[in-house]
Image (cartoon, rainbow, N blue to C red; front, top):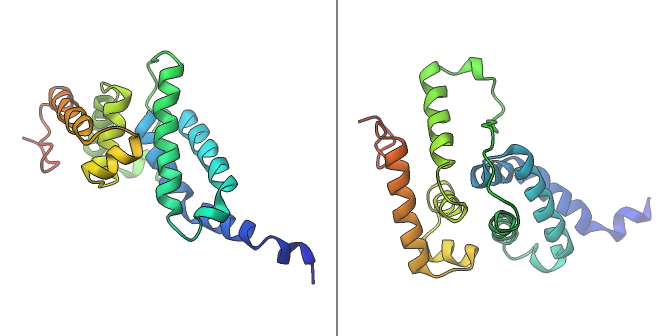
Length: 175
C-alpha cells in the first residue's frame, strides 16, 4: 500500500471539499465581482488560504471561512485597483439557446443592474439575498457594523430599483 495516502488524509478530504463546492463558490464570487476571470482568481486565492488553515477549520465551518475570505478579498481587490467596466459573462453552464429570450434578457438586466452598485453594496446584496445571510452574519463576513450593512442594503436596493424599474424586487416578478 502506498504510504503517501496514509500520511495526507487531510489532502484527500480537502480535494473532496473543493470538488463538492467549487461551482457554487465560483457563482458567488462572480456575483460579487461581475467578472468571471476575476472571480476565478478570487476563488483560487481563497482556496489557497483555506488549504493553509484546513487542519484548523475542516471540522468547524469551512464554508463560512472560505466565503469570508472570498468576500473580504473581493472588497480589498476593489480598493487596490480602479473601477473598470466589465463585460457580462454569465457563469452558468447551460447554453444560452436553452433559455427563452425573456429569461436571458432578465438575467442580463440583473447583471447590468448589479454593475451599477459600489463594490461594498454589491457584496452586501449578494450576501443578504443570494447567500440568504442575516444582517449580523453579513457584517461579520465583511468586517463592518450591522448599521453599515443596513445602509448599504438600503442604498443598493434603491439603485437596483432605479436600474430595473419593471422588476418587483420583493417578488422577482415584473410590475
